[in-house]
Length: 601
Image 1 (cartoon, rainbow, N blue to C red):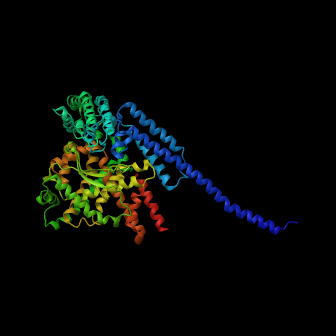
Image 2: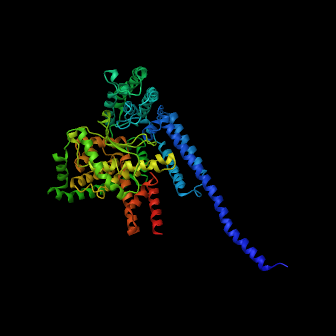
Image 3: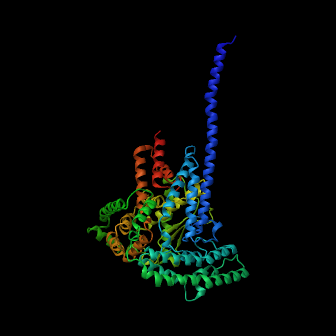
């Protein structure tokens, strides 16, 4: 006779066991599936990253310091290479679609989303004929290699192997030049050419690569100052090989390029300034706007936003002028500030560099109040190479991923007597710390995959750097009204970019109209306004990223502050913004919203 109570207990026990063990077994199986999906995704992302490094070896050297590709020079503008790019993006898209998102943890899901976004963005970019514009005064492979030749820039030159690697790159430069000439000929036929002023700015750069004395070629710079570790026999052998390659093929190739651009391309270059003036240029520009800002904003919306920001910032300047005992208009105030001799105190490049190092020393003590973590990589402050002084602006170069090279803030001092001190604090916060250096160095130190270490979106990166300028008050470095006014000047400059970039490329503004607008609204010198305008002409859409990104981060900070009240922690907010690395603004917004919800729970 069965004891029904025992049977019932057994049944109940069995039911209880199934309720306990069933989910446990299910979770174990799910964990295995999660782990497998995450493993496949990490492998795919890193394989894609490695393939892009191989496709774009100059970027690999410049952005990551990866020595694996430092002997390579791909002709990225060649039709065959463009086809390779498309095949990679399409194949990786198919492989990514085969990895389900649902079982992934939050970090892996973000990797999935980032990779999908990037692949779609790159595929769209290949639909436009950027390869027909292979160089300008802001971006030129011949000039870039000349800047690296001495070994004090992106490519190291400390061993015999380093010299051999760079020479291997130089040997491929003539083929790049021939492809560039072929592309520009095609561009002439299709009416896709550079604006004439940009060609005129490029020619002197090429002239600098063709000195009257062949022994003074910048491509031979590394052979004029060998490191002590390289012996005399190796020095003679390396120098002879470099001279043979540079004088035998590289210099003639650059001379061909210079001759073509001066005699054939310059007369055919367009007289208009904006991308919207080339066939299909309006659509091309809209694609670039979406890519650079990672938003769905239209050029017109960005133009109007810029006008509003310009008016707001100039209003702040109008209120600040009383601290300078000034009673005139804001335009007169800006003009008076620009002409005050006390704001131009420097007599040498070294004095400018010393002033930046002093700003760094003032900023550092306050950073722990705003950030939970600081980068391990050091930040150095250096002058830019002489060959780039005429066209470069102050900028940041990230540390090598392996820690072999620090982050560097490069300073451009054309004339020390004309280097304005008022904007230096804001500029350092932007380019140095906590701007680009914190964002990029921390990303490389914290990310779990190489792909995530090196992901970069302009709106996020430049938006963060401009937001970092706004932290000067909390860091105690804007107590001086001059420094704060410099911050407003810097912010005004970025707001004006929204107006003039869209004006040039969407609304048909001329170069002269843009220069005049900049001079009127920010009191720029003719040379500064010309340099800025020609930068925007060369890089359509890039300048939009700064203000669009900054405004989004400021809006997210205010959203978190209002939602969390006394629980809002600025250090934790900054960790949320920086902790996962660069991403489109829509993903950043979703991430911060999830954090707010988690804190509220």
